[in-house]
Image: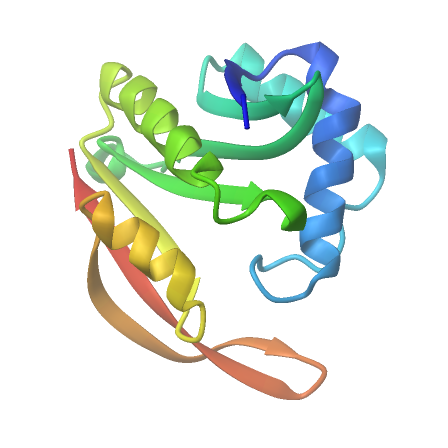
Length: 163
């Protein structure tokens, strides 16, 4: 599978919104259950580009099949920290797409002065935890009942990597 990794650009907005929505709709991997209105997500994507933040998309034959971003945290004492977000379309998981995306996003984040990258992952998402650990992330804590969907609670791990 010949997957290209590119920095987010305006041409990717519609495809990225569709993939984001599909992953949200799985109601398992992200804190969101839907992407919301395209106008709002497109405005958000534009703010990411305008801010020069680390945000990459994976493309297969011109179609967006995944994304990864490392967005800065706010506050003077957290200015060296970022939070990682990742999503890959269901049919393309397990083929190294996530690894390629994370590697690109971490490299740009490092150039932008991000020295610590944090993420949240559900305790039952063993595949993602394995990927993150293989890239140097470590579990720093457990948040019990951190996510709730239709009265069901889920524990999550807080993971981080020092660049």
